[in-house]
Length: 554
Image (tube, rainbow, N blue to C red):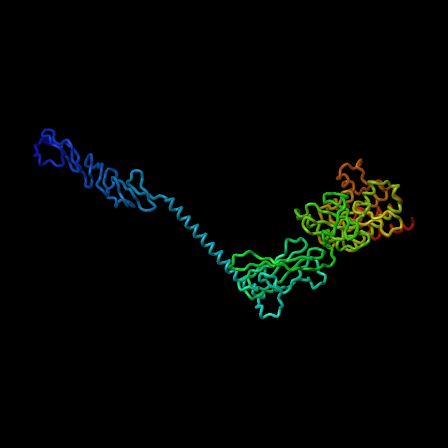
């Protein structure tokens, strides 16, 4: 019986699973059917199990259950494979959603990593290939350039008499006499020639080198390294620079290695000899230190010996590490090298070799005028000697000014006393040219804002950061003369506790009161030398003339 009260034949009932109850009808339906009103109705097409007609719960193979409907997997965008009514596999760059009924675009990180790695590998390979090509091109170019400047020739076709050194090495000379025995210029490159041959059948790589790192000279060769075939020879250029006044007696090495053979390098040697001209670039081995006599921020001073002369050795502190100090040292050396005058401390030379940098000058056993002031009373130094100190100092400054040099640090510390005897030509000499400058460099509109020198001796224009020239040295010497003649500090600390007090005092046109203790003739010189206006000061030659006049009266 049907749900509407009609009687149906059992044969007419479709999709019923199991025995049909005549009263109740179907209790359970077969796959593809669903139970409704005691009868089994067929599910939608491709649906294998459903609850009502339009709500499918399971689909046939190759169909995806989506929103209670069965959809063929190829009808789902990018779906490639189905499993358990879900899209199991999507196209590349796509992935299934949580329900398994859609393919959504997603990033495939492992593929991105592979692509990135491949790109990096391609870039590296490209760079390596470019480097290899550039190296190849450079080597070809170097080879061509070397062929232009390098002479390789067959030994049998040469008239050079080769000397065997062993292990297949031949040389045109076993001894090299630099510059053919003539004096060599210091710190200038010289050129020598030597031929090296290969007496073996195999190719040989040959290089010439100094025996060890030598601080007194440097050597370079052209070619640096070369491969020579058996029976051939190469002409080597040796470029040698000797860095100081010295005698060279050394050996240079010929390093060779036979190619295509597992053997070690062989080393042969030839001797080089030569002697330089005398220069101010000194050999450190000629300088003998005896004892330390002073130390300052600039460095340490030793007394020592150089070529039989008693000398002062000024060792610079941290010159190698400080580029500014190195330049200042080089400037002072260059300046001293130009000076040759009896009133200027004699300059023997300097050492420029790293870790041994120093300056060698004449030794003044009494030290500076300031040293003598500190150690001796005025009664121990006669007025005649004090006037002579002023004359010698003025003549030293005169020499500088006549050569266009401004000292910029005139003070008693920078006049060294060589003798204290009367009737001696020279008693003291001017020194310390680290601050000196050529006046021609200062003739431009440049203003020197950096005050050079000691504040006590600074001219008003220097204290005021104005442009200054020779008259600033004259002012500094006026204070120095006052100090020498009175044997007193012109600016005692009891009155001038701070340096700026001195600057303020001088800038307002005031001068030390102890000038009143000075005799009239010397007082006149000092007062004419310390005028406030630079152009109103007398010249150094006028000072020399006036001091000579006073000395002649004594």
